[in-house]
Image (cartoon, rainbow, N blue to C red; front, side, top):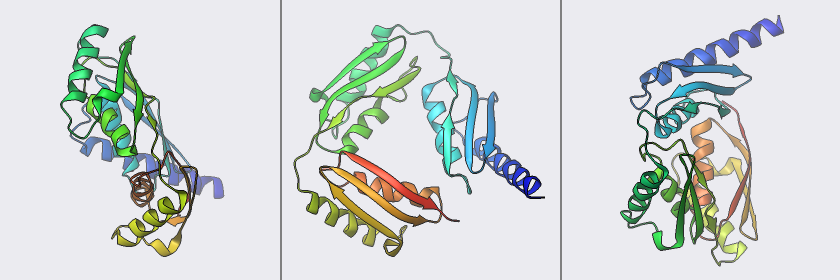
Length: 221
C-alpha cells in the first residue's frame, strides 16, 4: 500500500509540473519530458534556446511540492551562429547593463557555450551577468565562473542577513538560523515551499561579503 501511495504522489506531482510548463509562456517546446521521484523533478527532452531551458527549470521549481530539479534538457539552437558572433553579442549585453562591472568580466565562447570569468564584489552582479547573456541567440548554455571577492567581516554578514529575513514578508525568520564565516553562509531550518527556500537563499546572497551559501533548509509543506 505504501508503494502505491508514493507512486500516486509522484504521478500527481509530475502532472502539476507538466501543467505548469504548459502555462509558462516562455516554454514553447512540446518535446520536454517530466519525471518525478519523491519531490525531485527531472526534465528531459530538447528546446530551441538556452533561455527556454532556464524558463522550464524555473517553472518546475515554482510548482507546489517540488523539492529539487535536475535539468537534463538539451539545447538545439534554432539558428546557427558562429562562436565569434555569440561572443560579440554577449559582450554587448554585458556592457549595456549599468549594474554589471563588465570591465572585470571576460567572455569566452567554445562550442556555442558562453564562459564567464572574472571577479565582482557582489553575488547579484555575478547573477546579473549570467542573466544578461542567457538570451543570446545561438548559445547552448552559460558557464558562470565569475568569483565574488568582497571584503567585509563575518559578523556583519550574519547580522545583515538576519535583518533581511525579519524584514521579508515571505519568510518566517523564527524558523531560520544563520551562521557566517569567511564569506560562507550556512542556512538551517524549515520552509513551506521552494519559493520560500529560494527567497531565503536570495536574501543571503544579497548581503555584501557572501561568496558561498550552503542551504540546509528543509521544505515542509
